[in-house]
Image (cartoon, rainbow, N blue to C red):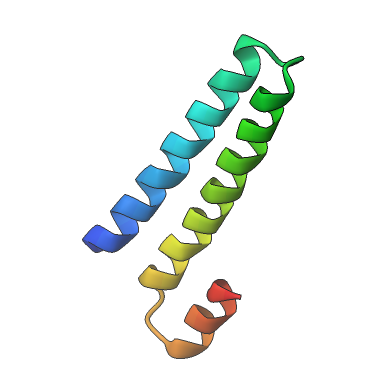
Length: 67
């Protein structure tokens, strides 16, 4: 079973992705919404690999995911 760190990292991935996409869909022509989508997807990608880093058993894959 994944640890609490892994679960929260992947929940952050899901939440950031959904919020970013929903804000962008609401009004895609506004520049602020585009920037919010970029920020949200950046956080989602970072959090996704952070979850893999916490889930790895060895140091070598963990370091690869952190870079």
